Image (tube, rainbow over all chains, first blue to last red; front, side):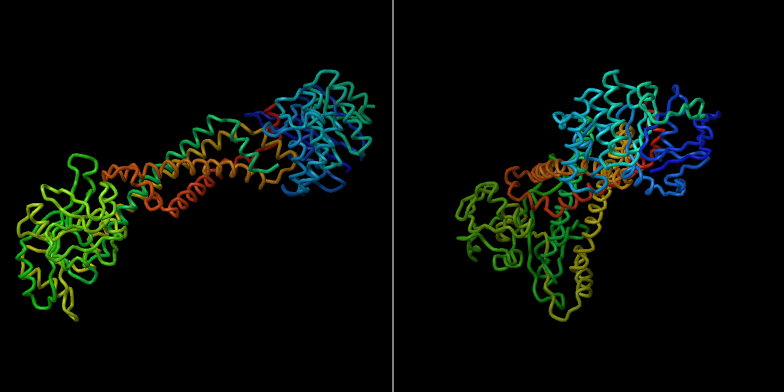
Length: 224
Length: 390
């Protein structure tokens, strides 16, 4: 899936003042590339990813998915795109605490209406792939942070999305685990031909990325 | 992953809160069942008393309280029978004495415990109707002055069987038959000859009521007017008038019942809504995550509604179980009949259909209570929630 933004702007109203989190951003992400969006805290990285991931609505400007204007999509269509064509990895993992690792990975497949047996087999396979074959029945609180993020990655790719949106995926992890996670994300881009967009401070991710954008005060620029 | 399993786990995340909420719903349900079953039972008993004296006129003392055909207190001289017989259009008159036994000073004084009915021996079919006697029993002989038949509930309570000798206010009596359950009144009645009843209860030549059978083709309303005009101290009631007298009492009971049920169900609804709102508020991130990964709105909505209805199911089951028990305890308190005697008839006191109605009402109310939290869960702005949680 090709993603393009044109003059993308997101303004938040906080009391009587306004904050422009994303300011006239033009971004173009081709298929199967690994893109890093780098910037300090509060620079607008997460806001940009939420907009690109169709989790938020721009104040002005356009998001084009395969040249189609996303603002014309209904709520239901946006959900379907998120479910079938996108995968999300969050800094705080956002696993459902009442579900075990296996059930968390099965969830997107269940929502997509895949047969139960297929859900189970694929979830087990994915968890084995991320090295958690022996932890599948553990609930999030019984897992380490690195393990939780690996479950989150398995969940993100459960429906074979074309785009993975990862918001500071290594932000909560130690350097060794962070390196592993970067490896997983990079392999997703290469082996699955998925577009990976990562918001990060992590220089390891920047080094691995095909394209790096820097964002500051909502303004985005392509790094050479 | 079944949605229902997920909902169970979500409820169990806040065990104390879930328990208190289920407990609250259960208490409300318990009251609904106990009060509803008790009042419905007494309303049903009153309605059922209408089976007696169909198509006949009941004559009682003026201004006495009458529930269906039966006066509560108030006596008239037995000579009224001859006075009524002289009225044109009267075919037959049967005198009858009722004595309702109350337990003074106790809670049970609200309802009579036992009834004693005295009427001429050959007229017993009038009150017994199609009710059968237990095997080995018979109606009293016409010349026997000490034979009685008793209702099965009294017989069970005091271990009376056919042929038993019982003592009532100093009189030795022989039980010649036990009436099998067909009417709540007859089950708690002791039936004897009029003379014996007058003797035992010290009402010489007095009766509670007279049953008047009109001649064919006589208009009852006219006959009633004539009787009341001719005999100034009596009140004559047709079947319709008797029903009309009882109707307001039953309506009051039913209206209060509905009001109590409505208030309790409303309180349950408020409780479940508040708990649902708290649960949704605490799990904003979970709902935002579900939204972010593309869960359909209907899925999130169903999940919240299902949680609320699970509270209704669990609270309903517990409440109905305890409510049924409470209904038995109330029945026992009001009638002074031992609790154990009510256990076999629990499904009569709290009919299965009534239980199902309450259960369905509970689930419906809890589902409705889940709507506001469910709407809240589906209206989250993912980006804002996720940002706030960081």
